[in-house]
Structures are given as C-alpha cells and as structure tokens.
Image 1 (spheres, helix red, strand yellow):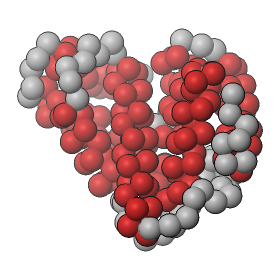
Image 2 (tube, rainbow, N blue to C red):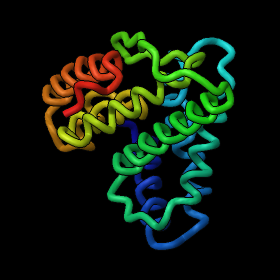
Image 3 (cartoon, helix red, strand yellow):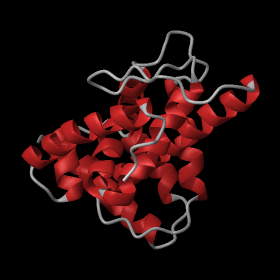
Image 4 (cartoon, helix red, strand yellow):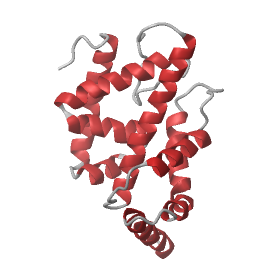
Length: 197
C-alpha cells in the first residue's frame, strides 16, 4: 500500500469516526474519498444488466448516498464495515427498483432466472431480482453467513479477500459458501421458493 493510499485510508477512518460521533458533515467529506470505489462496485454489478437499463451506475451510487444520509446514527467499526453496509443498501435499492418496475408493468410472478457464475440478473424482468432477494431472505433464515457472502460479493461487489475480512472467516470458507449458496439460490428461484429451509 502506498503512503498516499494509507493516508486516504486513515482519513476514511477518521471521517467514519466523526460521522459516528454525530458530525453530519463527515459524510460529505467521506464520499469523495470512497466515491470511485463505490462507483466501481456499482459498475461491476451493472455490467450484468442489459444495455439501456434505466438505473445507471451513477444513479445507483447517488441513491446509495441518499440512503446513507437517512441512516440512523451508526457506530462504524472500520472501512470494511462501511462497505458492508453499502452492499446491503445497494441490494435494497436494486430490489426496490425491481419491485417498482414490476408494479409498473403489472404482472407476472417470478420466472426462471438465468443465473450464471455471477448470478446474472436480467433487467427486463424485475420479478427475477425480487425472486433472488426472496430466496436470499430464505437462505438467511437458516444460514445467515452464506446469505451475507452472497450479499457482499454480488450486491456489494466485494472480492473474496474483502468478504473474508468483513465476515472474519477464511477466503477458502468464503469461496465454499459462495459456491454452495449459488447452487442453493438457483434451486430455490427455479422452484419458486418450494424448497426453502
């Protein structure tokens, strides 16, 4: 890590502490330091969407900022904790967006989801992202760690090492959980939730 990256990381930690202590301006000073990283994470997720998707990467990050502003006061443990919360918020934004699109289109239950190695979600069928969210909630009910791995890796765009750091598990466990969770989610979505539990 370069000294410049270390300095930026130290500033991120200081701003998270200030924000935790009630400094409402800390988020505004924090966002320029993490914006590029958040944008890259959102971009990785949006790369799986079809061209012309109405929710663009910048809009996703901007909506994330608005959700962060509205969060009740948090005690931020560190940068990884902040990124984990951002992953949860991105998931909620995308699910809310999909639910809104589904209600606008008025129809259809979950279809068959074409999940590939990265759990690709088709933007033209918002019921599919909702089906993934519902399946993830079911997975969380009996295996919360695997559900968190999916949330951090898929919705948050975190790598194996970052996910391992946040969850305090080994990278090998992350990969094992990731593989098992994907298989479970594919089965759950395709069955329409009939295999939960």
